Length: 131
Image (cartoon, rainbow, N blue to C red):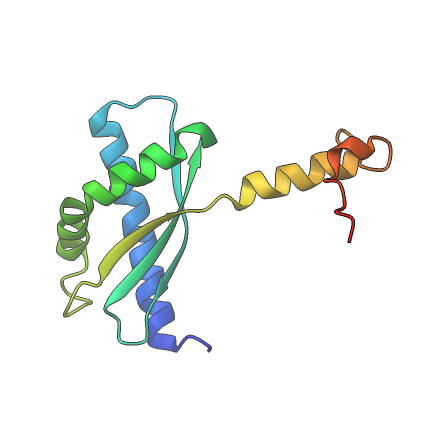
């Protein structure tokens, strides 16, 4: 199902405001060496839930960062509500997800470049089961 113009506008507003708020939270917490970016926000049809896809670098800290964001959800939601109070009547609930698409693309590039070529090294592919 396609998104309505209203959903797209709200998602765009939330994405830019969330990026600013998350960067500010990182600076305040003093966690150096972590980069966070909001790659996508999708809002449900009834505008009650916003799925926030966050890309974290380095990737090893992604699960811990997503868990921390989900625990800080009320604080983040309040800050976003203050920023968007003139644009939204009701602030949608936020659900944070890890966006690991960059890792996936890097793995594909490695496979294509020949670092993990299954033709040269058949041990990389799982064995077929005999029927």
